[in-house]
Image (cartoon, rainbow, N blue to C red; front, side, top):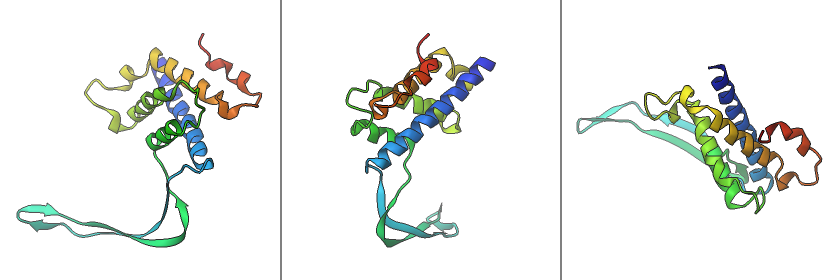
Amino acid sequence: MLWTQNVKSFVVYGASIIEAIFNYLVISTGNGNTTKWQSVKKVSTPQFDLSGVKHKNDIELFKEVGTLIQESMTFDQLAKKVESKKLLGSHFAHYAKIKPIRKLRNKVHIQGVEHVTDTDWWNFNQREYELIRHVLKAVLTSSVFRGRSHASKFNYLRNS
């Protein structure tokens, strides 16, 4: 059980590191989502009955601002931008492995559960450990960090 919980933590922290790097890459290269609309107020109406069915309205009021505002992006949106723009380099071979890592990370949150036996015990094992270790090392030593002499610091992530 301790091994499984450690793998789970490693996946969560590894995915967070990857997400943070992706967020930096997307924004610093000018590929982030922006808007000229700023939320001013959110209003919800009370429930009301319409033809025997309950309804309610949620209204959000926006104002136009003079400059573009960065919008926050989900891990999924960031990963898609990083892959489509090849922000880790055109030779980075692990773009397709990011989605499974994101899905694993989401298993920690309730929305990733699909059936009764879909628990941490069954989702975080040696295969998942190898996946996050391999991809995390590939991201940290990708061409984005070329010219840096830090690659040896991530040798603990190499396959044993």
